[in-house]
Length: 399
Image (cartoon, rainbow, N blue to C red):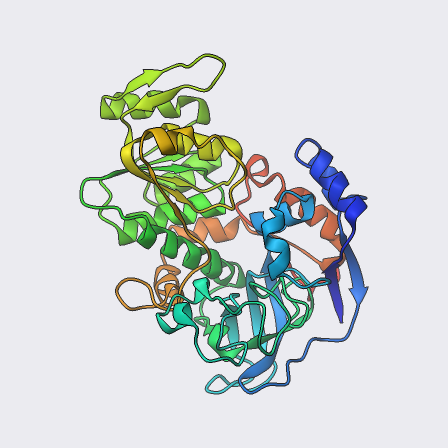
């Protein structure tokens, strides 16, 4: 089969880290530790596993960070190179898998928790918090926090992969593949919304209007009693989508503190040789980008004792506000099999996935065949500017 494989290359990783943020194009050229290969399809010969044929697989911000060398070395212990990336997956089952017959179109919960590894549940998995599994380096599989980061399972950036029944969710027949592709990031957004701790009357800031921020906006509006949701967006199409998905208002990055100060009666301070911040502000801020700027914006706009939710994989930032204003900083990683209320995040995401406002989001998905992966990565680095929410690889396409 054909697949894109990430491999270990210190020179390319160093090059990507050095210039990737300034010249994103190099990440789809010489600096990408990625190659198109012909390889054997992955097969995990354990009960409950099946082969899948990929229909679409998204390019996520965490994938771009990985290729650019910006991902923290913290994660090097929970992956197994070489691996085929791709954790946002829509695929067809090639084998019967317990109650799911071959031919079923499915989406994938990528977390490789105890059930997939053939282990008795750890404390996290027993509580339904599969995203907190403490056994992601042992069991029947090589190390890998998720499908798409594990040598043994393959990933969606290949024509086939392997998955465990605990990871699989059937997709409604009427849905397009592009709508189905939104389910995994929407499940993450559901988890973010339910972890945000929003209570009646809260003002919420969502910093970022890419796929993560837009889907978090929908989940916050549908699943929490937020009184106001202000979204930070750079581009006109992001503004339109954010308002359709439930935002009360949308502001440009340079306008955030002014808008929050005006709405909350906060005081704006301008320290020497540093960014402005507020005394007062929103009750909850969601960083949906993970950049230094977006995280600091979230910290600077949140009232004392408020909550800052890390939905994007974070880059190093000034945490002075978290200490000085006694902010509660909360991480939200992937999604859980048992969220507050008892349902899995994927069940809720599948229920929300038919929302009419997601139609225009699905319509913006741009797809590329595997051999045009360089173009796909270039596009993924510029989705906001190009009017796209999500870029995906389609291993079935030849042109």
